[in-house]
Amino acid sequence: MRQLYELAAADETLRFSPYCWRVKLALAHKNLAYETVPWHFTDKAAIAFSGQDKVPVLVDGGQVITDSQAIAEYLDEVYPHEPALFGDATAQALTLFIKNWVEIVLHPAIAHVILPDVHAHLSPADQAYFRESRERRFGRTLEDIAQNRPAAEAALHTALAPFHAVLRQQNFVSGAAPAYADHIMFGALQWACLCTRTALLEPHDPVRRWMHAVLATYGLETSVN
Amino acid sequence: MRQLYELAAADETLRFSPYCWRVKLALAHKNLAYETVPWHFTDKAAIAFSGQDKVPVLVDGGQVITDSQAIAEYLDEVYPHEPALFGDATAQALTLFIKNWVEIVLHPAIAHVILPDVHAHLSPADQAYFRESRERRFGRTLEDIAQNRPAAEAALHTALAPFHAVLRQQNFVSGAAPAYADHIMFGALQWACLCTRTALLEPHDPVRRWMHAVLATYGLETSVN
Image (cartoon, rainbow over all chains, first blue to last red; front, side, top):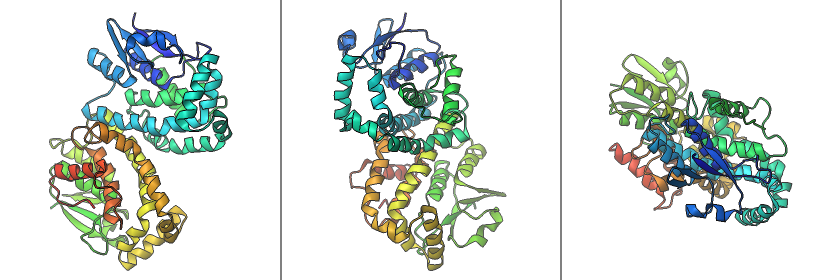
């Protein structure tokens, strides 16, 4: 069976990694069955076979593929008869703008809201690793970040404005049906919604409706917080 | 002859409208000849025949088309044998994210740098209209905006980060060759570069290289400031 090594919280039913969600939706999009192997930040030894120290790691027959983008490109190449993740060459190129926007703008905006909540979900060994690495990356303590949450929530809503505008004009980032650009965007928002201790989206926020529609497309039952 | 009503400065050789640049590049992309009719903000009567009061206005045979996006869609529909502006349905949908990002994030970031410079380029009648409408839209005087320029330039460079990341990975927003997503992005940056009184891009900025490459694709000689 195809295996996906996936980041897990102390409660292993909680799987919040934005990059792992991209791959789970991509596998669903391509109708490919898989089982997940829960993995924790400090389980470096468990994925040493992949030659690096991050998830997602996909084991597909004899192939080991790492990095969500490389996995998506691999899936489109190896399973060309399943629905395309990217569309034509122009669509694949445009997806790269959305990927960069999500990673450079949206992920940090979300991180400044939820990092303390993510920390609270982790096992003690992972908490120490997470605090040290994230405080170094953002140059602030988790307590500082927690204190600034109202401003960070306002900044997150401002950052989402272009996405809100798109959802007023079409059902998905990729048009009438979701594709990999939606998977990238979904990963970010699912990470936010699964980890936050207070709801980030109003009940009628179009982003929430879109999240349900993405999951429904693939028959996934996971709820949206 | 096909006619494009295009915004002009007091010096009518200066054409800086981001929306008109989108259409000029789209016409070049589709190998369609046209002549421009210079138009000024206060020439509302000259385009009354279009049923609205903004440029670009394209007159193509008996057709009058307004709004840059509607014009681009019209060109792809009416001239399907010329190179496509959008690509497949997914690419067309993804272009909408870039359009919204440019209009909601990039245009205001540029406006906060160059509005006073744009004002200086206009004829006296247009200056009065421009000052009144822009000060109302942004809630600040042009003098306030001018004073804040160093901070606005820093914010503009931060806003451009996702685009810089894309240009490290591929030559154009649309991949190996420019398409309408590049035209949208180019319009914004050409507006900035044509109006600013001090250079906004370093000589080796990849954005400057990309601007030259877009123009070179269509054999356009206009220089990039």
